[in-house]
Image (cartoon, rainbow, N blue to C red; front, side, top):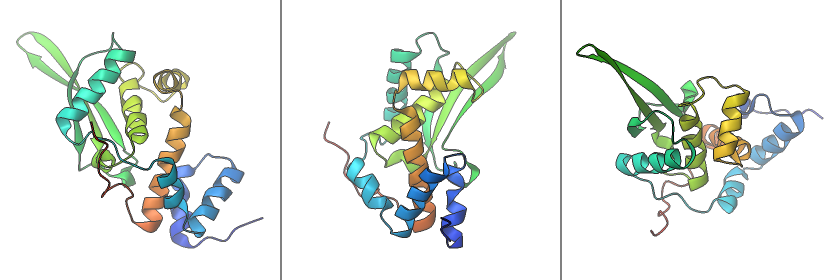
Length: 185
């Protein structure tokens, strides 16, 4: 059965390339019936409490300490308004190399798209795990995804749901957790 999609829905499915046709058909149906937001909000009713760059740094440090004790230290972690989903960047990891005296010093930085400032805690953790895994594994290969699964056993499911959310954003243009109050600490 071929479902004929309008152009915006068909174009938005680019975030789900590589998933099986039956999975795509289920997402297409949810999009056509305008039920993606309801599905996501039922699964993830509230946003996380990490709202500042300092709290994001602390959050990443805690994950790093728990799972990657021997990895290089983080110099900077922040939400970045310049990261655009259209560039397929939800987060970035960079190594800034500087010469100080006669030594080459490298600092590791992680930037998370500001889109995830208001997102469920599970989505933030998936992005954090992904970027932290790059401290050990540079390429998106088998070892990289094994490390992601070690740090977050539901990594692949969460990545899929983030991609469904991105598809929803492109089709509906409405963020879901913008007005949600973070959970009480």
